[in-house]
Image: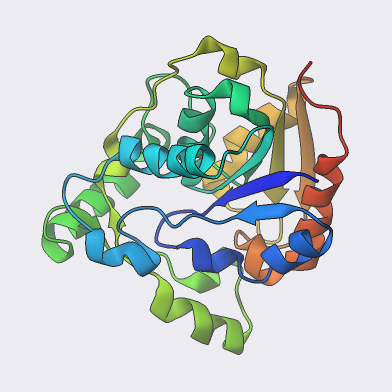
Length: 243
């Protein structure tokens, strides 16, 4: 039995894994889907003080209070930043890191460091004019995540919340260098491919220390192709890990 911790991306919440988790649990595994502070059912906790470290501590709390070790830690999109911070905080608890179409940051880099200037400027402006100076509105429509089914769109649209903008400005720290030794997998969503993640996908594909796989769906694979994504994640449970 493996322990999976699935961490959602920006504007989402733990709800986005709803179609995936039963498939992993049916195979006998434990699955945890924390919602990061200020989002989803925790949107009432939104504040200007929420930063990347807040979200890292959200996940660390799950590992601690659920007594989890040898975790397969999955970060989607923005949460590539989060799971990286977690991995370099408690490397002994993480068996494998999975970046699901996600940012893979270098030490000392923030998410905005990987965005083009025009995107950064738009995010700053929208946060200032529509988000009280600290909330980034959900600017990217779900269609851009590859969601096309009308029922799926009706489910997702009202659940996309403003995201704490400070989390995108804060750099990630590599507190424990042993985090570099954790086995890593990059899952690239290719239909359509989301350009912001191309550089990370290419690095993983060309670096022999990574496992690189592709999934023919859009960015929101847990919604559009849950069975196929589950198969990939279940395949990791039987792979050799650290040691």
